Every structure is written in C-alpha cells, then in structure tokens.
Amino acid sequence: MDLNWSSLGEVAVVSIGATVGVVIVFSLGVRALATTDRGEEDRGDGAPGGVEPPAGGSTAYGGRRAGVGRPGAPAVAVAGLCFLACAAAVLYGLYLIVPQFH
Image 1: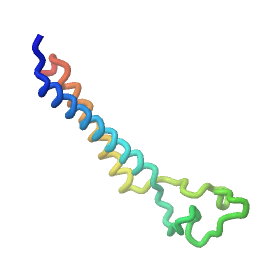
Image 2: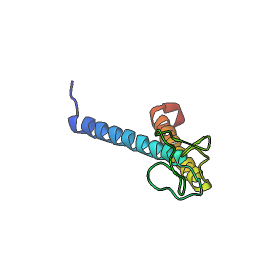
Image 3: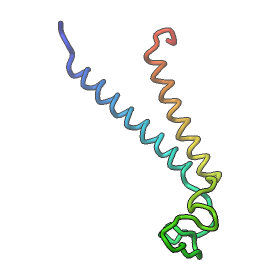
Image 4: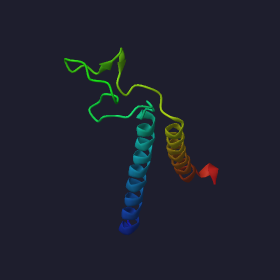
C-alpha cells in the first residue's frame, strides 16, 4: 500500500484550518448578539454611566441587571452574516463529500 503523505498532510492542514475558521466566525456571531445597545455610556466597572453601584456588590440596577438588553440592528446584521458564512461553509463541505451532488 502506497500513501501520499504530502497529500494527507495537506488535507489535514486545510481541514483543521477550515474548522478553526468556522469556529471563530461563529464565535464572532455569538459575541455580536451578546452586545447590547443600552444607549448609555459605560463607565467600565459594570455600572451604566451616571449610576452608582449598590452596596454589597450586587449587579442589579433598579431591578435590572447591567448589560441585559437587546442587541442593536448593526450587531444583529453582523451576527446574521457570521452565521450565514458558517452555514455556507458547512453546506459547501457537504457538497464536496456527497457524490450525488456533483
């Protein structure tokens, strides 16, 4: 049995690179959805601008947790593009694997 080791190594490198790329793009999409558009300036200590954190280290401000809200439209658009790119990569991989699609 004769193995072409350079081709095997090339396939391994490309598959690992593609996997890492899809994971990174998917993570960017999740991160984009995790951002919130609070409309207030963040002071960097977890409290929205102008609001003093309550005593005891609680993260609640007026009955609401800091950072909880809906993501803005640009963040949703970026997340959608990231997820679309991931879906396209997965579908292309399936296209390459399944011989009936050729």
